[in-house]
Structures are given as structure tokens and as C-alpha cells.
Image (cartoon, rainbow, N blue to C red):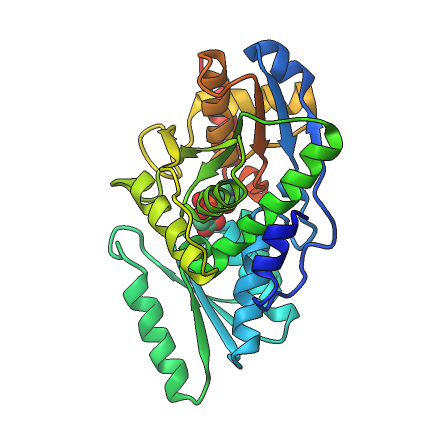
Length: 332
Ligand code: 5PA
């Protein structure tokens, strides 16, 4: 852990959900194909539930909830949401009662199947009729308060200043690992959904004056000026830490292929290629699209000589959209 980051984070309550440092390793076939050195940090192996980036945000979010005496947790997402499932699972483990507000079809697949298997309370709404889940979550919070409960509301993807601290902490880990490996990365690349992970990277790398630049690959959850939103979130998290640091706007490239959650043949084919060449499983909603972007950008020389990809998890997406992927891959 980088000492500056360690001491800035020490006043914030954190529950330990990641029991180890996630490994960093080289991807030889990918590197040979793109003409740059590509490493992966295995955030898919964060060690709680299905793993993934959300676990790091939850360490701080649920630490905050517990320290303030909340007893219920509400969060939101699509039915395939990795964030929603692991939030609920971690809440249960810690004795907090979770309620998930989800959008989409109630099919027993992927994360929604896991929600059901773990007995998690879900309320599922139609995508067309419910463009915004936030008012529903607030209504549910009101109902729970009327029953005498104390609900803690977590935004989509855990993208709040407190959740962002999880990836500031991860930068501390990345820094000590790069020193041990004798590597200096030019870029650290991740999939951008709610933007919390990239915001944490932006703040963490900025705080220690790292040479490595954060780069996001947008998968299309929010439209609009995502770079500005991520910068604002990083700055708000900086205010929590009471630091004044001039942060650069992170670069975000759009590889949503038209829409969030749209399953496309190119990405399905790439997932198969990376799986069979490197033994790494990506998913069709987040990491597959991000890796597609990484390979194109690296080939074009946009990411520098030494690239670190954060594998942010999400493999249940393969079991949610697998049939659709197979169908696309069988088409000529
Ligand atoms: C998600 C997000 P951020 O939300 O921090 O930008 O992370 C993007 C991301 N990889 C990257 C995986 C596997 C993810 O699940 N998932 C969301 C979810 O509801 O699961 C927040 C959208």
C-alpha cells in the first residue's frame, strides 16, 4: 500500500471484503497481437461472492452504513447487475437487510438467478415503463422508514464519493505491485459504467502524481458527458479526503456498440478469442466491450507501450447472455 494513500484513507470506516491483493500478470498473446505490453489486474478475483470491482467500493460503502447505524440497504440496477447482487450478498453477510430495485425481464439467469438463489428481496420493473429507478428507490426507502427501519441508499454501481474511495485504495495496491514487478504503466484501462471505478483511479493516480494515465472504455450506461461526470465524482471524493489536487479529465472512449447491454457478435468473438488464448473470461456487457476497445486503441498506439487492464469481473453476464452470444456467433 502506498503510504500517502494508506494514511489519507485511514479515518474512513471500511469492512474488509477483499482478503488479499489481486494478482497482476502479463498477457502474452494479447501483447503480441496489439504490439504493446498488456498486463491484467485480476479484479475479477477480489474474493467475495462473484468478485469484481464492486467489492472494493462496498468495503467503504458498507463500512459507512454500519458505522452510522443503518440496518437496511437499497440499491438499483439492471436485472443482470453485478453490483446489485454483490451489494445484497455483502449486506446479508454483514447483517443488513438488502432490497434490490431492478429493471428488465424476470428470467432465472445470471445474477438474477443468484439473487433468487440467495433469497434476496428484489422488485423488478419494466424497462420501457420505468426509465428512472431513483424515484422508486426513494419511495421504497420511505416505506421502510415508516416501518421503523433505517435504509442506506447506494446509487447505481456504488458511484458515490464514499464508494469511489475503493479505487483510490486500489491505486495504492497497483503502485506497490508495479514497484515489486519493476514496471511503470503508461495507462490503466477499465470499463466505464457508473464511472466510480475510473473516478477512483483518476483521484488515486492524481494524488500520488503517477505517470500512468487513467483511461475509460464506455459501455453506455449513462449518455452525456461521462468524462465530466467522472471528473466531478473524483473531485468530490477528493473533498471527502480533504486534499487539494488538480485532476486531469480522464479520457473515455465509447465502445458501447450502440447501447448499454446490447450483445454484439464482434464482442462475443473477442470473448472467445481471449478465453481460448489467455484463459481469461470476459463478459458481453462490460469487460468484453472494454477489452475490445483496449485492443483497438492499443493497436492504434493510443495507450502507450505498457498497459494495465483492470479485469473488473462480471462473468455471470456469460450465463445471462450466453445463448444470445452463441446465436450471434453461429450467424455467417
Ligand atoms: C461494471 C459496472 P463502474 O460502474 O465503476 O464504472 O464499473 C463498470 C463495470 N465491470 C465494470 C463490471 C463487470 C461491472 O459490473 N456494473 C454496474 C452494475 O450494475 O453491475 C454498475 C453498472
